[in-house]
Image 1: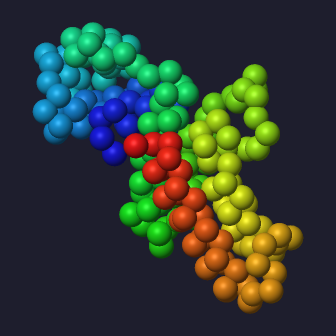
Image 2 (image 1 turned 180 degrees about the horizontal axis):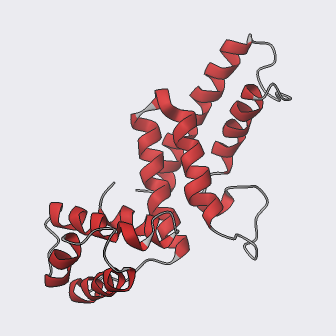
Amino acid sequence: MNFIESISNYVLENYSVKELPNIAMKALNENIESESIYILAGMDEKDNSFEILQYFNHSLDELQINLPSKTAAAKILTKYYLMKIVENPNKIFEIMKILDNDVYKQIDWKGHEREHIGEELNLEYLYTWYREIQDWIDNGMILYFNDLSRDEQRMKFEENLLLEAKKTLRNNYR
């Protein structure tokens, strides 16, 4: 995960202030430098949270970087996790679970008009297959591929989830 993706995790409250020095180290590893980034990268979780946050904010000012909104952060991380799904199809359910918990569920989507879950981030079709895998794991009601064996069902659900991840990346997250 790169610097901007890590900042997005911070915005979505998946990372605490105590993790900002690690984010600063990522910045330095990506040749993103400022006086405050150097100081922040030298700090750790034992340092005062107020000071950590102060150096983080100074580094953002020095680098002229604005924190993304929660929705923008969610889109940045959605792209990251969709790419992870495509790169690691053998971990498709685990990565989708992280995307669901650490991205989608981190935002209160009330007030956003939608017909289907995930629509706000163009994930509605992925959720179809993610829920089928969840139901398969829980021995719940399966809606698709009932003519196949249980193992074949799981393979088809994962195959379709992967196809939807690729399509969503291609059409919405270039």
